[in-house]
Image (cartoon, rainbow, N blue to C red; front, top):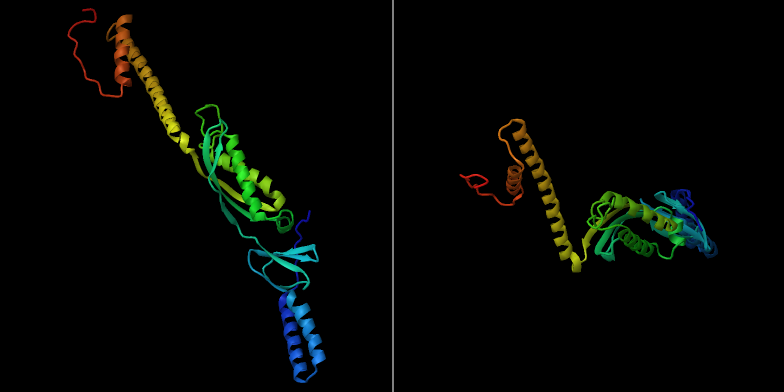
Length: 285
């Protein structure tokens, strides 16, 4: 496999001066009707001198191929002269944005989800990009889609199915992005492509289960909230009983304690305001 070779060709300004001088000689020979010399000089000028002049713009490169053999790559921007018989292929070194399409895949637990990613990449090795793959743009698109699908299959959408999940697609954005970037660099390295950044741009449940999953999330949130309320209420009831006992405010038997606990839990755990009732009798009448 060809690996990139950096070329530093001579400046093209001196060659341009030579071209202009030979052009003047050609004109002088034509004026003096020395047509043979004019043809020879013109042939040399337009076949050997002029075709070798190249311009390399910033963040671009020229890959040189001579008779089917890779010669090297000019990455330095400027005006140069190279072998006139080489084929010069322009390759951009700028960063590209790939806004991936939304893919419908199954997560780790088999739930259908929609996922898409934004990938920033650039060509690092021009020789691999041109000669190792048929079309590096198409190669990036296909491998990026494969990497996103593999990522979605490897992790759960959230941790409601398994509370011990360390990384999920919805909660572990930074870790998931790093793993996606690493996998893309491994997949695109044979084509000389470097991934600068990879981020999940769209993540949602598929439409056919989105409503059901929303209800499940709401139920889970309600259960979590209720659990927290009950834990707090039990702590407050325990503190109230302890305070009453420590200060000897009132002596409560087990039945009265149970009634008090029941009333306090109703007040503390209820989702509506309670109405006070004045009991003028006793617990036993």
